Image 1 (cartoon, rainbow, N blue to C red):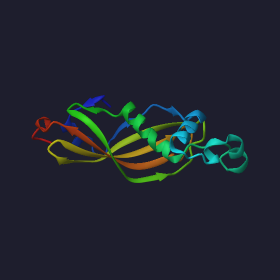
Image 2: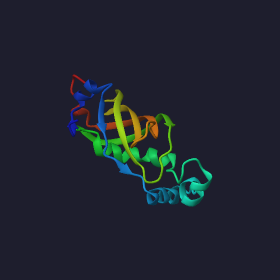
Image 3: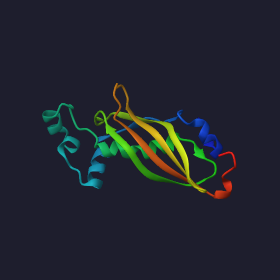
Length: 162
């Protein structure tokens, strides 16, 4: 996928996969840092010895919300920028499902398909992505989500054919 597209290109990409990110290694350090930032110190995330002994995971796993938050880095890594864009805003999620745990040391990557795109105003385009976070070597993904973002642009940049 090209690293830059124009607003009129978006409608032609509906239903198409437009990006697959590079792999990101989810380290114990990143899990611990996330625990520190969120106050979620559940042992399944932060205590490798206890998690190995008391869980079916064989060790610690990433917080589901850590896996979800990695979508931002994955987005920046692989999605094309809209040429007319002045700003992109995270609008939210319609559906998030945590399908499989991400074990400490695993590598994950994001896949993005444009599910919908519609104008909210003369200078705002809401884009919905079907997003998946895959785990390297695993059949099931870490998560699936419908992610909504708002692309802001100058109204004068919206051509008549969009």
